[in-house]
Image 1 (tube, rainbow, N blue to C red):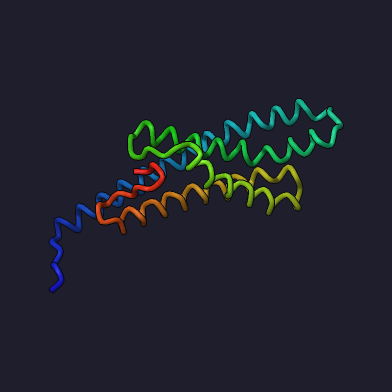
Image 2: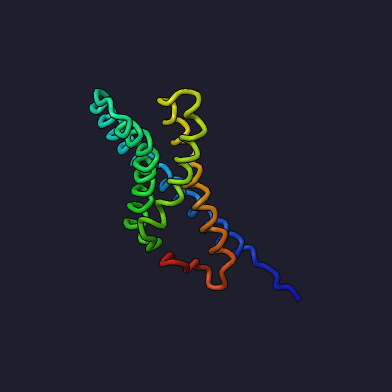
Length: 154
């Protein structure tokens, strides 16, 4: 026989979910800010090295943009998780999510103009951070203890 839920339990669950949504929004905003800071640094370095005519330098300049921007997204998430004490995820475990998003975003928008990759990287990088949060939340709900413990994540 199924257990009937009391209204108080439903209110607590709703409050917990709303708290999780607010944390996710703050975490995403912080990661977006950090990505913007690192992208601005990459752009400054890109413009300073624009006089170099080496093809190897050109390849390194363009391929480093998604990695540096993804590092900014991951730094924002890591800073929030450290300050809030919610998870103990390693930087590399966080970094893979925005890296995949930034690489896809840069690859999709490069053909419209190389300098437009910033829009694709930021859109796809933000989406990947949000998807990561949703995946972690869904796996925490499915876990019998309510915590997701895998590769050091808690």
